[in-house]
Every structure is written in C-alpha cells, then in structure tokens.
Length: 452
Image 1 (tube, rainbow, N blue to C red):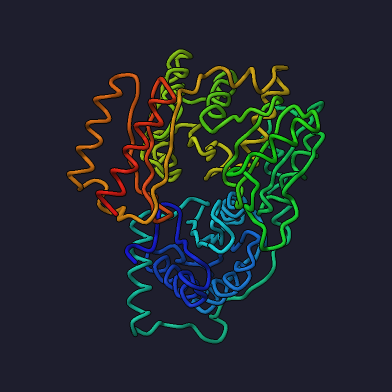
Image 2: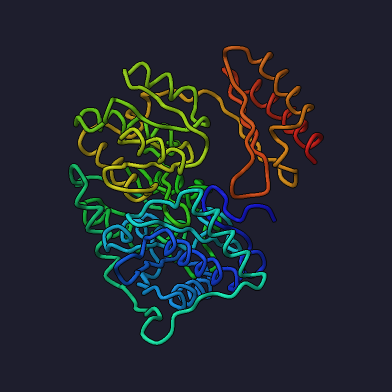
C-alpha cells in the first residue's frame, strides 16, 4: 500500500486498513525506534495517549496502549481530547511520546494514528520511516526484544488532562470575550467538551451544535467541512460569530454575523494584524502554503507583512516556523499554528484568539475579515487515480501548461496528490469565477484521462 505514513500520520478504514494488529505493531515499533535514538536514556519512558470519539478509537486505543506497555513504556490515557491537547500534554507532562487516534475531518469509518515526539512536536520524516521499517521487519517474523517483570509499562487514566488543557487555553488569551454571543460547531468530535468550556469561562455567551458525540456521528453533516448548520445557527441566534472545528479540533473555520464563511486565509490575516499590533508577529512574517488565496498574499503585502509559502501540510508550515522562529502560520483549511502557545494547529485556540480580536477591537468579524479579498478559487478532488504520477505524466504537464497560458498573470494552477486520501486535488484561481470553473473542470478531466 506504499508508505504507511502520510502528511498526517497513518490513516485508513478502521478494522480494514488500520487494524488493531497494526496499531499495536506500530506502537511497539515507535517505542523501539525512540529507544534506539536515545529518547528514553536514563529514565523510565512515558507516553500520552488520546483519541477522538470514533467507536473504533476504543479498540485502537487499547491496542496502542498494549503495544507501548509491552515495550516498557508507561502510558497516561487522557481519553477523548483534541489532537492539540494531546500535543500540549505531551510537552507539559514531560512525556517522551504522544499518540493521537483520529482521522481528523474524515468520515467516521476511518481512523488514524499520529505520533508526537518529546515536547509535543510531530515526528520527523526520518523517524516515521524508521518506525515503518521496523514495523514491517517484525511483521514478517523478526522477534521483538521484550521486557519482563517490573520492566513492562503501566497504564493509568489521566483525567486531569481536560482541566490542564482548558487552563492553558485561557492563560494565553490577550483579553476576555465578555459581550460576545458565539455559536460553536464541535463536529460531534474531540472538542465537544473542552471548547464550550473554554469559551464560556472566557466570558462568551455560548450556543453549541454538533456537541453530542456518540462514536458514530463525528463530522456527519457538521463541523468545519459542512458549514451549513453553523451559518443557519448564527443567523437564528443573532450571534456575533460562529466557530467550526473538525473531528479532532486541530482546525478552525468561522462564520460572521451575516452567515458568511471566514476561511483559514482570512483568519490568518486577522490574527497576523492582531499579533503585529501587540509586537508579537516576529519578523513581521506569516507562513502559509501554496494553497493560500492570492488575495491573502496581496493583503499581507499591502499591510507590510512578509508571506513565506511552503508545501501543503501543516507539518511543513511548522517546520518553516521552527527553523526561522516565526510566530504565526497556517493553511486555508483552518489549520492555524500560533507557535508561542501550541506545537500544532489548534482549532479551539484559534477560535478563542479570533473572538478575542473581535472583542478587543469592537469591530465585527465581517469588518475584520474584509482586510483581504478572496479571489475566485475552485478546488476539485479527483478520486480513484494514480496520484503518484502527478509530477511525471507528460500529458498532464501539457494540460497544466495550456491552462497557465490561458490564465496568464491573473491566476494560477496547482495540482497536488492528497497526503491522506487516494485522490488528486486540482486548484485553479482566476479573476473570474466562471473562468476558474471552466479551467478546473478541464484539468480534472485531464487528470482522470492521464492518471485513471
């Protein structure tokens, strides 16, 4: 099935692609690789394990915990918490490893495993490659070295994680949210408890939707990938704004008081200006991916803020931020990283900071987001094609060149194989929406023809 690790861990249909045996084996392999790398030297190793509410997360959590404990790692089970909460607790508790079980915005039958290194940062690519290689060698018969007696790991619930994470979120807010009425769509996901709690304690009047996870309804017609319910609820309740998370709450999209969507680019623009106002936007620079709207780039240039662009994936945004010490970065999809306060995208933190800017400025989210004009952008997902040949197909290269000639300087084309799903994403940006749709449609057909 190719490389197991995508841009965001290992994902697949739970109990078909991602089995209990695989979860156990990858966890044992991760423990052995980190031990070989010297991560556990001089102390008894400790891991934090969390999950989103998917039904399959229950047996996968058990498998991961069993694998780690069998490799001599003590495990703190934090239960259902957002991905950024697991990352934060991994750092705050001095753990050697964090594991999150989630398929983020994917449908309920999917699940995934994401590993965090000490400090709560995503594992480097070379460590993931090594974990995969060790896992494969042992899956084909090489025996494990196993501790016995007091050397085996111990498991214990860590219920304090909820309160620690909420306390962390509140501690970094620049101001309270008193006077704001906010609708929160929790996608029936991992933030259904912590997000309403944090916003309420920060002073907002909170209305929740999608906050009743039952293990089966995660991302089902709600959350950041389905904003219709949130738009309707904001208007129905006369709210100042709405915030939507995905299943593991590492992303945030918003809706203004008129029901208009505020995407990740606009959120980044609002937060960039807010951070610069507080002299917290280091080097007056924001990091985004090549998928960011051209309107975002133009808005940052007008404001005198430098934009650095990376490959698609919040891990690449984070790598750029860490390498150069930048404070803010993110993706159009709503992954926003505020590096002073989080090691990964944090949807709840992003929503709180966005609401704090509304409260502090006395301006509506609609007015704040108008700092940038979104140029028409069309995205088409082309499934069931050989995404590995996107960059090598001569026919596809010719189709892209033709599209770029047609768009000229007023637009751009981007073809990208998904890092988490078996499809190719076709993105076309143009000054005119009809032209963007037409070009994107032709390119999608070309992808099917060349790679199908």
